[in-house]
Amino acid sequence: NGGPTQTLALLSGSPAIDMGSNPATTLDFDQRGDPFVREFPTGSPDIGAFELGAPPPPPPTPTQRLTVTKVIVNDGGGTLTLADVSLWIDGAPATSEQAVFVTAGSHIVSETGAANYDAVISGDCDANGAVIVAAGGTSSCTITNTYNALAACLARSRPTRTAMASATAPSARTAATRSTPTPTGTASTTATRSRRGPTPSTPTLTGTASKTASNARTAATRSTPVT
Image (cartoon, rainbow, N blue to C red; front, side):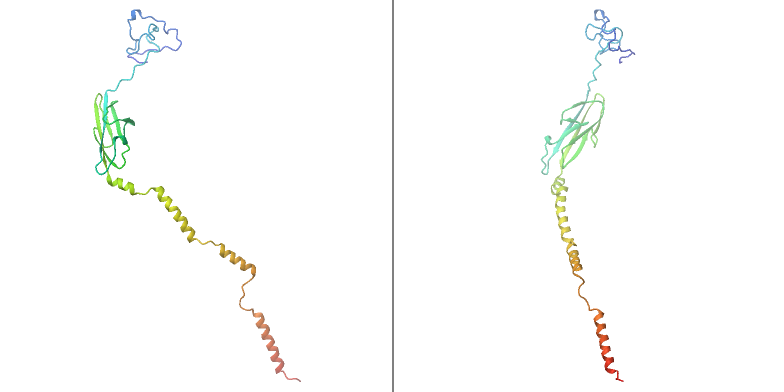
């Protein structure tokens, strides 16, 4: 339950609650010590070494401080301002050059919103923005953004994926339409010819054979003498 010695907490509804005494308010705290007051509420101490409902001690106020400073270099045509960039300490918003109270230990400094700028983190932070703040100490980090004209130029000239996909899709559909003939006409013509009958072709052998046989019979008749 807190304090330098073991204590037994009173249960809710215990008959010992607010039934004790503290003559002349000689005791400021219960057996656990500061900040567990002996009378809670005032004038109504509990029986025993434990005061039910006494507020727990507040968390210690951090004394360590961490400061982040933003430097912007717009040489070459950059237009970035402090208002365009967000600074962060452990994911919480921070303001340039304003110290923030932090716990002792490891922290991360970062930023967002500096497109087309090269970022360099220096000071007590490493290149990735990590910093260790000593107990009771102060640390400071600087993030310098320098305008990168080449990166900005490439970003402006590079088409977006959406625009490229939109331009490619109609071309692909047009090419497919032009290069793929439909088989409908050929199939229709073939079916029509089939219904009309076979296409005239070389005369059959039937007529030729009949004419040859007739000629043969005539020749036989002329060459045979009458007896």
